[in-house]
Length: 492
Image (tube, rainbow, N blue to C red):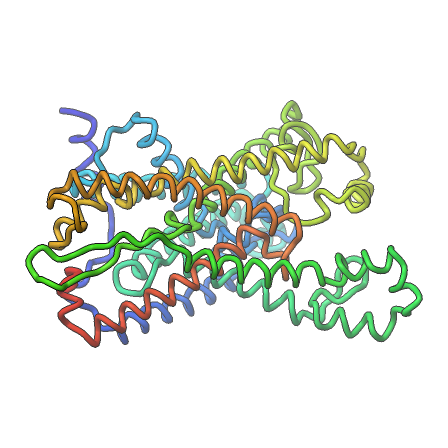
């Protein structure tokens, strides 16, 4: 018996959300989606019982797009789902696991393997944080319960795993019964919350300024003189600490992503049986969506976790850390750029002086930026290509879908091979260009900063997901109004 034959029964027995029988009405889909969104916010505000305030969040810098909440049941967020996807995409892309993603049987095996891998990753991402001492039990809770701190640690571990499993099935519910995907919905929820906080929060930061941009501007008008604002130092203060650069960056990224989402190449189609029935197959500039950017940042996050765990054990060969931030070594260079404080010399000097460690030289800061650019642009291209192949968006699966729908490309023979040749002219090239474009845009947004510290990746994902969610809602409404269209797309 082969390994695949041994694993398939296990994958088939994994718990799963039942698929709907027949068409789910738009109103019901909307209710399911909103219900899961409310549940997500509720779970993100339920603190882990027994957790000490001295605990360190390993993924603090990645919260925006991991859709997690520090110290809550949603501590892991979508991290295990994304990491499982990375592992499987790399294995399939390298032909270690040989699957034909246009074959329904192979697709089912891939999905089963991915779900199994998510369960594994939930444990693997929670356990190091427990064993490494980054998640610590509250001694007061242990004393009140009359148990040892290790028992409380075990209770925290179980809670984290439960939260990871819940978010997996919440994602599955949205995918099957709702609109869009749960992963995208949770990212939008988390980033939107950060942006709202970044606009209106009246709390004070470590420098004594209000955290929110609007309260910060009110404070500046009332307390900062015009003579200081007119100086170069005052201009830098307004741009960075005043949040003007973050606001400009946020608005610019929003407009650029909306423009890019609407930019496409349209391949003409004609129905082989119905004369005059024509259509177009759109190949968007961001053909693979911006979700591959999650995979790039998740890869960096997991590398940082390894470095942080080693550093906690006194092994500093890869670099040392201040809290959850690398301050030297290889891990400093492969850490993501998150704001102007990571590359503007005066701000880098201020940050590292605050850590009480040696300030990196100009060439080190420059190398840090270059390596992050390589990660984002190169990784964006690689993961975009993997993404379209593993999600059935490649040239061959797309050609098969067009052929099965009864459509053909005018001027070409009506067979899958002819359609595939045309698709090969566009899809791989557009995917590469789109992956590089999104990587460069993410780098730019990360360097300039964003409102609420959502990060370039988080903001980019949110705008693109919301735009596509709008398109999905419009599509669902159209199919609700026109049953023949629903029949054409196989949604009886």
